[in-house]
Length: 435
Image 1: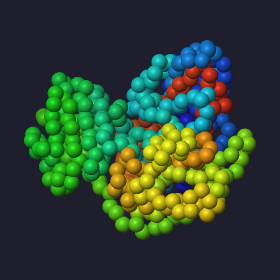
Image 2: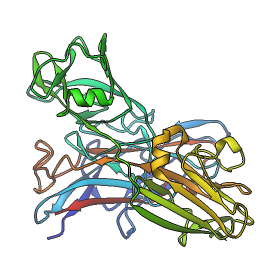
Image 3: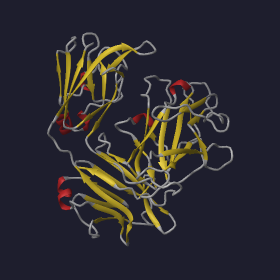
């Protein structure tokens, strides 16, 4: 049997959480901005409370504000034959290349807080940073489908302490006892914001405290881990973060590394056509301005049929609107043949690109002779997901391996006096794996 979910949302009328809706909308003082979900996308009903909570948005340019958070969770309505996991969300549209576009933020938490019109403590991540190949993974009791962001070579985690009914435990960036995956060559900082309550300690997998190691340093509640090959060799099974007198309050730290050896060739055909608004943009394999995902062990051959008029380049600056600066062109692993001709061919060897390091990676593709014709590209070399199972109607989140719903998901809108509603919120896709 195929599983199905109901959306439960805080609607801001009765002061409590738990009203089922068929869609999720964000509200502004002057417009309802509805959003719908699904694959295919279906129309929704969440457009009834436009004046219940909103953001004051005067029309003077420069005035900024945040909408009240839109908070929802997914509850299992029809159980799967076995289980489902990896609930994930991404926008169905790309970030508009327009100064009047609003910013949408997403996040999640095991805790419910009534919506506020100040900057959210949970919706911290730009929604447009995600796509189908790099989705936002939803947690269940803090256990997340965890994707590795290869743009980040150093990452900081904020640790807090909460009592969940049987004693204090660690939460990492708001997620309960989140397992950490560390990529070889990166640096990770764990900041314990409540060191006096639970001193942060690193153990090996046998429960022995790591008090001294050249790649692990302690400093007043801050632990820095350099994920070197030597550290992997010293602790091949991984590590545990916890506190000295209770190893069960934290979770595991595991390793991964990139392997090389190109095995596949992917051909992409690019041409330039007008979009529905009449603006000339790139179409890749007949798809308008897609976000490209470059994976390891692949050679990409990009044939630009419009190269004589609109030469295409891969650029290392994801915010570049035009590939006009020579220093902005990602050259590591990239070769251009017959540039600026109708036979233009861009060849990307991802092995060489990965080995050159993130500053030289291709984070976007754009035209040399036109603005905002392309889009972002992502670099993906590893992923770990599926740390929970949803399989029992009404089971809640207490046991993430036998759950009935997700954690709370937060959305928030950041606007200014020029933001136009048609640029505010795309439809979102919600998807999961079922077995």
